[in-house]
Image 1 (cartoon, rainbow, N blue to C red):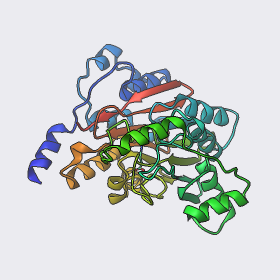
Image 2 (cartoon, helix red, strand yellow; image 1 turned 180 degrees about the vertical axis):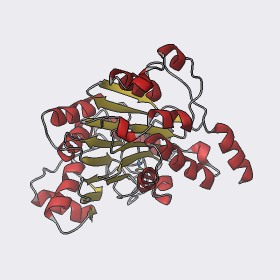
Image 3 (tube, protein in one colour; image 1 turned 60 degrees about the vertical axis):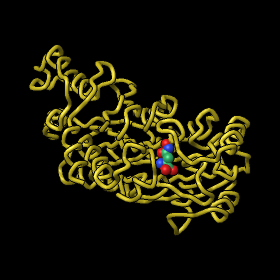
Image 4 (cartoon, rainbow, N blue to C red; image 1 turned 120 degrees about the vertical axis):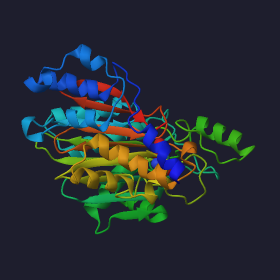
Length: 357
Ligand code: SD4
C-alpha cells in the first residue's frame, strides 16, 4: 500500500503537454481573450514552456471566481463526440435548457451505430443481448434512470420519462421496457451485424478482459450549463462489452456515473464501472468541488482514490470530467487515451485528458 502511495506521489503532477489539446492552455487562451489583465499578462511563450501540470497550475487557471465572468453556455462530454456536443450547443445557443441540451446531445451517440458503447450498435453481453444503462439529472436535483433496458435506442429519453412521469428514480429490465413502450417508444433490434459478428468471434475464447480505451470506450457522459446558469447532466451506455447477463455498471447510478448539484457543478464518468461505483465517483468529484477544489483537482483526487484502493489499477481505465458553476472544466483518467469535448463561445475543442499513468 505504501509502495502504491509513493508511486502515486511520484506520478501526481506529471502531465503531457500538447499545445493544441492542453486544457490549461485553452483556458488561459480564453482568459486572455476575456481581457483579465492579471492572467492576460502571462505570455504565450511562457505558458508554452510549461512542462508539467500541477494542482497549482490548475488553481491559477481557476483563480478567484469573482474576478471572472461565468463561462456559459457550455457543453462538455466524455470522449471525442463532436456531433453530440454540437447538438447540445445548438440547443443552448437557441436559449434552450441544459436539460434539453444534454438529452439532445447524448441521443446523437445513442443513434450512431458506429459507437459500439452506446445505444443502437452497442456491444452485447456475453449472451448476445444489448442492454442499456442511462441516467439524467436536472438543475433542481430531479433524476431518472433506466438499467438493463433492451430494445430501445434512446435509453436517455426513457430515463427522462422516468424522472418526469413517474414517482420513481430508477426502472430496470422488463419494467423499464414496458414503461418505455407505454410512453410510445418503438421496439428495435439493437444488435447490429458488426457487433454480432464481433461477439461471435469473442465467444470462441469467451475471455472477459476488456481492452482499455477500446471495449470500454465512448460511454457518453455530458454536462451542460445554459444561459441562466442552470446545470444538467446525462450519461448513457451499453456497458462493458461481454459483461455477465444482468450486470449493471456505474453509468445509470446517480452519484456514480453522474451527479449534478446546481450550486456547485457536475461530474460524470467513463470506464470500469465497478471501480466508479465503489467510490461513488461523480458524487465525490462534486463534493470535492464543494470543498473548494477546482474541477481538475477534484477529478484527480477521485481517480487517485481508485488507485489507492485497487492494486490492479494498471489493468483498468476510469475517466472523470467535471464542470463547476463558473463553467470551469477538468478531466482526469488512469490511462492516457481519454479525451473530452468542450463547446463554448470560444470554440469547440477536443481536450486530451491528463492521466495518472
Ligand atoms: C460501465 N462505465 O458500464 C461503463 C462503461 C464505459 O465507456 O464507460 N464505457 O461500466
